[in-house]
Each structure stands twice: as structure tokens, then as C-alpha cells.
Amino acid sequence: MPGLALLLFFYFRDRYKKEPLWPIFLAFLLGAFVLLPAAATSGLVQRLTGWYSLKPNLLTIFLGSFFIAGLIEEGWKFFIVRLYCYHRPEFDEPYDGIMYSTAVALGFATLENFLYVFSPGVLGGLGTGILRAFLAVPSHAFYGVLMGYFLGEAKFAKTTVEANFFALIGLGLAVVAHGIYDFLVIALPHRPLLTWSLIVFSFLVWVVFFEASRHQAEKSPRRNAELARFSEKESKEQSPDGTSPTEK
Image (cartoon, rainbow, N blue to C red):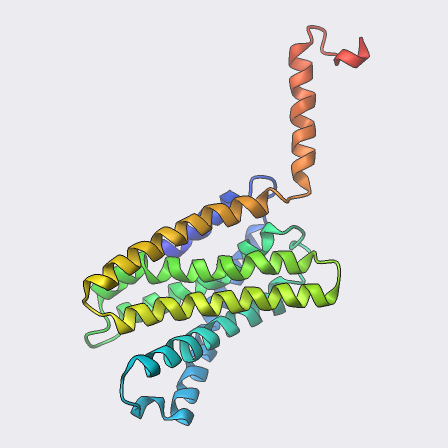
């Protein structure tokens, strides 16, 4: 499954410390579970606002993409990350923000994709599931990376005000990215512009995947310990008697 494949990608991007598998798997399951209240909240908001009866145009698509889909879905994911992941003892370096946020996001995306595959009608089916596996699932991981990068910064911020500021930036960027993706897909169906927009979006996604994960992994406090062990090993290999130059 693409969700699990991406989860492994982020797991192995942490070069200096591998998280225990159980809390990551539980975050994945919680991400899948939170799809249910997210869908219920979205349906309630649509009924209360009369969004179903609004004439489809760019404004209603924009509002639906950013506030009904983006804000509600990312808000529920953010809630799970902050409630379960953020205060765990395993969350002890900046990269863990990305690891746990993407685990929640990919659990959400995996169950959502599964439901699309078995949904009746033109929007469901195996073809839709395959298409979403290459577009929607990585996109959810992308929102998770944006959110998790700044939650990692928030976790180790010097003050509570700074931590809350970083957390809100992460949530805000995830909402904006989610809204942009949904807006493009809904507003530009079956048009060449949609294809090119998704190509650019996909390229941006993978750039952020590699750069954000690399940047946060390099902040690991274990990195200096790894470098120290490497230097010590190199010194011993260069010395015939196994002693360092300062010991001679």
C-alpha cells in the first residue's frame, strides 16, 4: 500500500534514531480512526451552511476546499498529533514531529482511499483508488510534513509563546496546502492546466519530503555522538597500534 510505503520512507529518513514501531503504528491507526469524526464534522458544517445547495463556482469551490476540507481534516489530524504524539517520551528530537504527523496523515489517507475504492458510483472504484494512491495519499503525507516540521520546532522552542506560534504555522500551512490541492482538483477537472498543476505540485511534494526530513534529521542531538564515534573509529584505523595520535 502506498501509505505504508511512504511511512517506511519517513521512518528510514531518520538516520540517527529510529522510533519504536508501536507508537508510530498506533499514530497511523489513530489517523485512520479520526477520518470518522472529520467526515461527520464536514457533513455537519455543509448542512448548517447550506453548502450542498450553493451553485458551484470558483468561490464556493474555494470555500469548500479550504474551510470544509482543509481546515476540518487538518484540524482533526493536528488534534491527534498534539493529544497523543506530542507529549510522548519518544518525541525527543525535531524529526519526530515529521515522523508522527505523517503517520497520522497516512493513516487518514489510507482509510479514505480504501473507502473510495469500495464506494459505489462514478467517484468510487479501483481506478479512483489507484489514481488517489499516486496523488491524494502523497498529498496527505505532504500536509503531514508541513505540520510536523513546525511541531518539531514547537516541541523544542524556548518559550510557550514561541511553541504555540510554530504549532499554528504548521497547522496553517497544512490547511493551505490541502486547500490548494483540493481547489485544483475540483476547479480544473479534465483540463490540461490541471495536469500541469498536479505535476508541479507533485514535484514540490517530493522536494519538501527530502529537504524537510533531511533538515530536521540533521538537528538530532544524536548526530554529534555519531560523528564523534566515526572520528574515533577513523583515528584508530589510521594508527597501527590502535591508539589515537594524542596517546602516542
